[in-house]
Image (cartoon, rainbow, N blue to C red; front, side, top):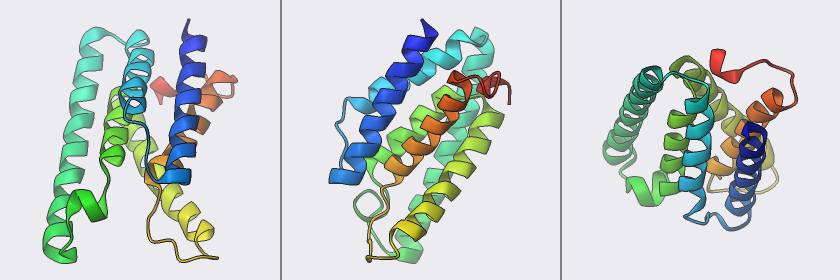
Length: 161
């Protein structure tokens, strides 16, 4: 069953990446699907209370990051947060990550995914002046790699990082 969920999750992540690169917009139903699939995989490998605590901590971390980003965009950049700085899809992708991993793994994957996004975007946009970073697309590719590492047996469990 979990292999089927893994494959469904990888397909959904691939769709998010494809749409974000192609259209800079992602079908709205894909994010709840990601949240359910990723949350189920983590929940099925965890204890009920541990899952709730970890997801709570992760959501607190995301809320803090988003609040700091909102304040920075409003007072320093003087830009509208949801229209010019970050898309709703990016925020929903954060929520997907929060419900899909324990706190330590979430922090590692979150930081590595952001760095991956920045580095790949720097190299990808050298030829053209790309104004927008398809963050959800880059992070989807990164998370596909994370899940692929576990699915193909290169790492025992991403949930015990």
